[in-house]
Image 1 (spheres, one colour):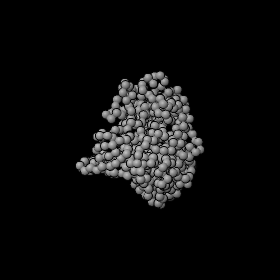
Image 2 (image 1 turned 60 degrees about the vertical axis):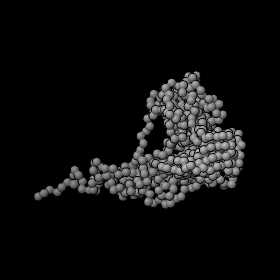
Image 3 (image 1 turned 120 degrees about the horizontal axis):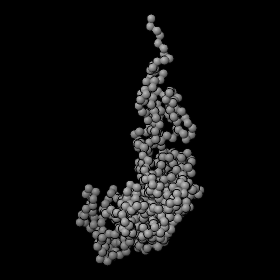
Image 4 (image 1 turned 90 degrees about the horizontal axis):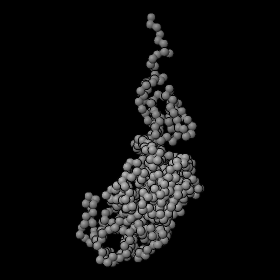
Length: 541
């Protein structure tokens, strides 16, 4: 007679064999990946949507010391990558960032200083966005920082290159003052001519050179008797300083970038009856951002596409019409004349790197920018460079990102531990999200000053979001690739194998009872759970 089997001591059970199991993951949101300043956007949006605004601001300040500025002038590439755009429209990240920055100014919030005093001294040359960012992060790391700025005020191109109707000076000055309050010494009207000597005389252990692109490029235009010709950078600087030039009734701006749009809009505010932008390509190929051109046109600026100035005779301009071939302008031989009282050249800018030519070891690209290593160090030991001075896109956000990276590289240099950035998590795309339950929630638009009210003054055009609107906008974030404790997995598990660990601590899986059914994975809206092979092949009754 065959004995009955002992079912309490079998090697492999009789239940379902689990071939996969869920694991919690942290993936890289596309907004974070696209931010040149390296902000953890998803993290501070999560805090903002919970109404924890000061914590959100502190999280933001870990990467960017100028949120009120960035919320106004950054061209927000993060929003171009936002997965929410596949449902309705991107999260207005820059608007929430501005809200947090303004709220911090209003309430006098101060950032935390992380590192203990190191005893090291760092010189920063230039008080523009890159220099300010580097100084801020170096101070947080415990180093003593001194900025030498050639101009009469700190801010660089933020102050002189961006009109007040886009960036009010009070907000800019308050954010700069916050950096100074951390112990950063800012020396104004101090132009550095001999960098090696400056470093030695100040007993500095390292230097970060961050001079902005203040030099306007010239145009080679035949002129029998030229009228009033200015470059856009000088023009905007003079206006900011209260020394606006007399332009006349008809002003032409030559160029198609964002600076050209700013110059034309500023000319209108100074009383020009007509502000005309002349650009050699079409709108599709212009370097200015589309919303910049839209704002300019809304304020009465006219744009002549596919035109090149060929000759100037006092106030008479001869302009040649152009055609595009493979995106490049070619002459057509057709000409027209324009009557212009003043011409503003907005053909790009360069950084003044001439004073570095005598520094041993420093090398330059053909365009005059400084060659740096992946540690942002030049060929001269202990001298670093970033922002407009190095080959890169020239935007405020890129400059701030350079400043942060340079600070970490300088910190590594001073501590003899080279900086190594953390490895990025895999990127999460929209196709990996489970957003079937998401309803349409259109983006909250920031109100703007009526066009008629913009004509004669420099009041800020774009207004901020209210507390309610900022909270709502933050809640539109999908939290791509990062658990936000929605309890979807907890509620979906038929085996009660998801264990809640308390607010802020997320969850864990009890693999003793998990069957690997993937219900939690299917219910997770943000792809914070992945199913992986179960190599142990556990069985469950």
